[in-house]
Length: 424
Image (cartoon, rainbow, N blue to C red; front, side):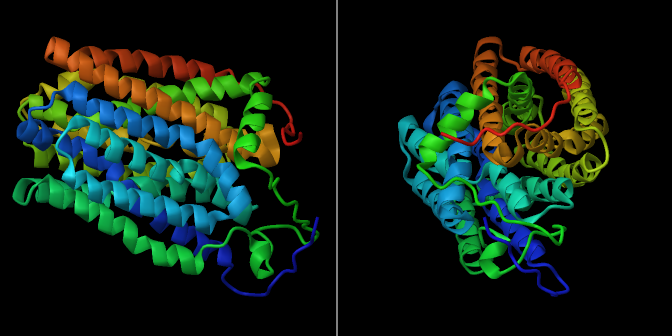
């Protein structure tokens, strides 16, 4: 236990760390959106089925989620800078090596394993850890801003990827993603620090009598698993897991992977559909930052219930909007869905902190793992539904029903004091 001195600097370095973390998330997010644009050209070039391509995405989504709790423990053990740098290098390697793929299993190895491990080593648990270490005030807002980094990555890369795929081919698009991830590494090495005490500071908004309580630094795998074991005994953990699994199924798994192919099935050019998905990214920035601001002021349970209910209604009408002969109705869906895309993250992180105290980031890592398990299942199931029925309608309706379940579960999460999970 050590007390860190307070500096009189005007701009707290926590905001510089937040900016670098935002850029790192943007660099890793490029490939989060890329598969939906690359699926059609790969299908055309190699004749692979939608199900085969969805398998690579499924492995990516699973590892993206399952790495999160271990990444939180690794960040506690080795620091944010080392873990984030290695993660970005894995993303760049996977994207670059995917250009040599000639068989579906090669995509599983590059798209799935390498990029899944890389993005999973950062993911949204990275945002939760930065906010937890560097901020005592404005945590909800910071989580919202950092979460929006994923949407910004989609916004920055997706239109260029779609144009490159059309004009130059999917391999050049993959190389663009690799370059974007590499560009952020020097910034991470120079500016990112694990905790304010490393530079003789206290977290932003910390009280004058702040005392630094260092995280456990034992075996990262053991720490992540022992935290999970204790978290499973708390009912609220399972409520958060259920809601976030549905969240993942209805974002990364369904819309993120299959919106462009589905829109193409209804006659929209791939570049137009990619542009619509990029608009989701624009409005996601607004929605997620606003959600972070609200999380500092409103009961997060209420926010989650509203977000899930709104998402369910959007999915319920999507099949009809895709069949419309004009684009404005679909544009309206894109705007509304964008505002809700990952607005669920700030209130979920807040609940993990409220219930589990300083173990919140690792617990959120496990909750986020359920997000990606749900996404992986949805990505595969939607691909199978499309191959078997020739359309995605059943997938949209099923996801709408799940969102209503998540709204009810979230609204019934009980209040309780934080519990400590750390320990042997």
